[in-house]
Length: 363
Ligand code: PLP
Image 1 (cartoon, rainbow, N blue to C red):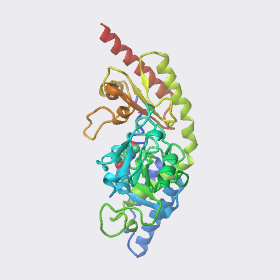
Image 2: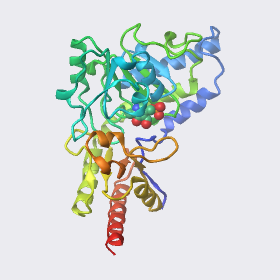
Image 3: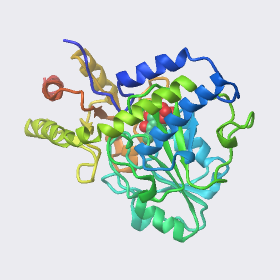
Image 4: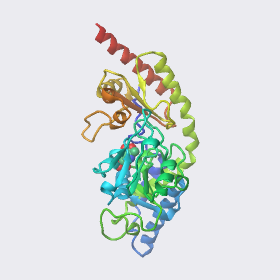
């Protein structure tokens, strides 16, 4: 049996349309900055992709700045804010690590930004993600944006995990900057975008030839951007398919809960993405769970593997008050191509693993 890939939030399978568009763009000659015919053709490909990405999030095309991924998009939005910024306690490292001196805003036990306790007074920027990568919990971005704007703050939203899975509307969210990543929507790794509301709103991370209207110098990654555009276009057309996943997700929860193995579902009471489950098994380290499931043919992830692959407690679950259990949760994430049988197989394997562990401990 081939391994069931249940780690879409880490990276989603590349869509055939994106791979084909990328292969074609890879062999096209021409630097998009050149004035000759080949250059103009390359530029037209980038501008088409800009429109496709903008359409996915209901933004004007001329506000999309292509970057090397979600991490750079976040870093660009936050550049220069330092201690004048506040962010929710569940932000991805791509936000946290760029704001080491910032104020951290608390979340509820269900992993939702706690609007009542979110003190943004005296800040210049607030960053709140749209959907959390580990729990899938959706954040009250429009609410915090309204409050922040009334107080004169800039608002940044990391929509990397939400885009393509639920409707993301840049205009309705009313944020100043919004980060996207191609490989979370069926595009290639290493390309992303920052959507920027104002004309002079971000501080470039570096300087150079002034591409992307000066905000992101460097010859753009043409094949990656073209593939990102193709992925965005099919993600936009396919958005309804994701809403069918709520029922599948809830079926997995029912299966695991009725087996009474003591599993915890994080963010259970909050609105969440249709494709993400954060499941804790108290007493069993996350990496042990991940390895056992891998052997059983299910690729899932530990809440928070850093680049070295080492698993520590999840900062998201710690912020939600999980305490020692924060290092004992796995993330299961899937997509429309995932078969219901694969998820049922996962649930059965997880239950069996948990029972084996508890009888081994009892013996
Ligand atoms: N933001 C969130 C919420 C993410 O989940 C990720 C990737 O895991 C990133 C940002 C970083 O995106 P990229 O991998 O394109 O740098």
